[in-house]
Image (cartoon, rainbow, N blue to C red; front, side, top):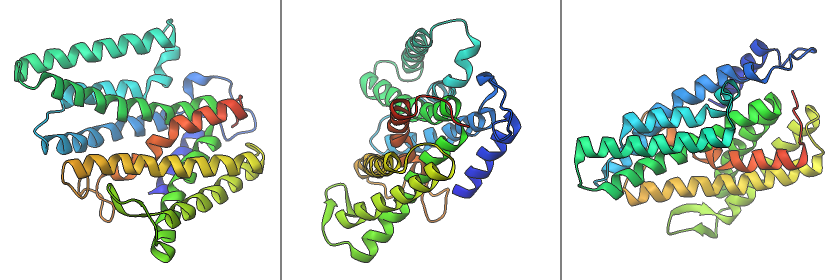
Length: 279
């Protein structure tokens, strides 16, 4: 799946000219294919989160939540086409989203469970849509390779955590949430993410290897926190997986939980250390 995602991202870079020597300085066409893929993923992810909410007798209003999530996830792509401050765009989008949720609540449920339903729906929009927007933002603002560096670092940390935990795991990391996670697994996650980050950074001239090592360590830790956050939701709903659509993993949420949590950290890290677009 990671290889397929990389192939789509590289194809996206080839289509918009990011992989050629003469890159067109036109940010409005950068990341089109990636933006489409991320937007499509919002549909099953929202449905899976709605399934977890129903286990607690809470409704996530899928039509509004999916539409709002797609708009938030793709906001870095479409905002340059609007002659308006990005901050104003996001505030207006948030306001219309909240209004839509309240109208949907009134039509479908009346006054029953207003805070629970609208609160859960708004959480789902922010959790999936806003965090996914940073993945698209990494691609548009910093380029193809930094975005892939972020995704590969955090997904390799998942592999490192599993391997480290299976081979050496003794000391529980968060037994109340995920009994299988260990500090040894966290060490494996950090090691794997640091190696992958250094390879990307030195291979594509993104940053120094020292900064890449720091990035990898931070991405591993935050990625594991993102995994634990989704585990809390599943444990509260008494569900092992968010769905059974992906054999061996569970659902889409079980795959994208760590990249979602890491994306804002990655964007801020690149902003502070790189501060310019890298193709």
